[in-house]
Length: 397
Image 1 (cartoon, helix red, strand yellow):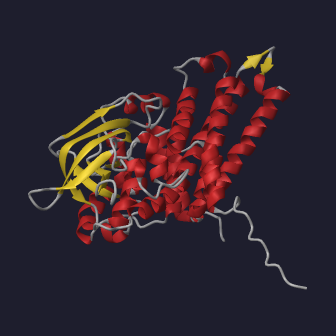
Image 2 (cartoon, rainbow, N blue to C red; image 1 turned 90 degrees about the horizontal axis):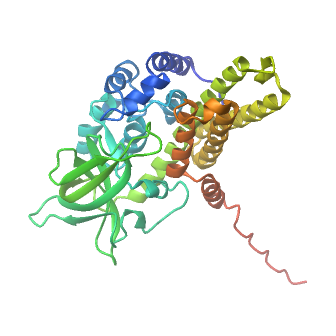
Image 3 (cartoon, one colour; image 1 turned 90 degrees about the vertical axis):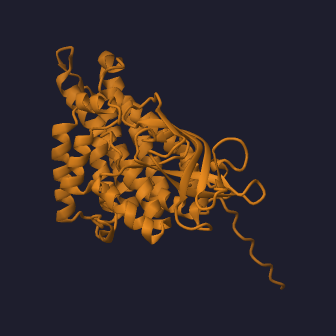
């Protein structure tokens, strides 16, 4: 295994860092997150034109760049450093792979090209608390109960009585970019309780009966919306009988690696800004960074971040290790963001200080994709660490 980055990857990282460095200061990030869309549309189009960011991992035949998931993870490390509010996670990491895996040839041709070009954004309308389960990050639900399970709650689907198509009704809350995405991928339960199954449906933003609203969330850079479907016409993604749960789990494994890299980028930047601050802030006539206790705390954080970065890079190469890498990265981000507030002293405890942007991202990500202990427990279960060894056969003497 050659873990070194290629010249193309280094150039992509440099270009992306340069663009975001000019356009994503703390004030710009807050302003972009508070727009109606929840992100800077002009910057999103610039990233699409110059770097092909939305289509980085989309096949070239559908208008994408055709890179490996490792390149997408590398790019997301940079967007994590800047805490970039964008549709990148919902569109490129969650929805595009599902369309590529499950969609018919006509659906892939019609949807992947505009997604890769940045003109179309998408959102996976799984309720926020169920997102980790749907993607099989912290456990598995073969029955698909997170999609409604045939009971009240979630979204239900029924075949259109007029013939052709489906109708959806129900609600999903805390949907990433759910208030602004042009296209919704809606998991819905159909077939009743006894023969129920979860399927994915395509819903356009102008579909009659679709009601969306933005929700107030802890982390403004991860905008979320409430999606209400009131007898909404929908198109089935792919064919009835497709392995929807398998496709979601495969998407989740790649998403783990990407999210781990993004969290590492945020943790690294929080640490860098804290180091810069303790070099300048003086107490008792000397910089507080010169005190041994502060040095030890920063050294511990550096080890945490570097270990998480190594795990994230390895997961980008082998997505099967994504769960453990995400757990390591989320823990590193939580610890670093917390220490950043502590080491900034009194100013760090003010809610308006920039250190809280990283703290909010850490808390929000663990709520959406964790918690850390469940990520680790699920990874251990999949690896068979808690399986009792088979007893050896008794041999007669």
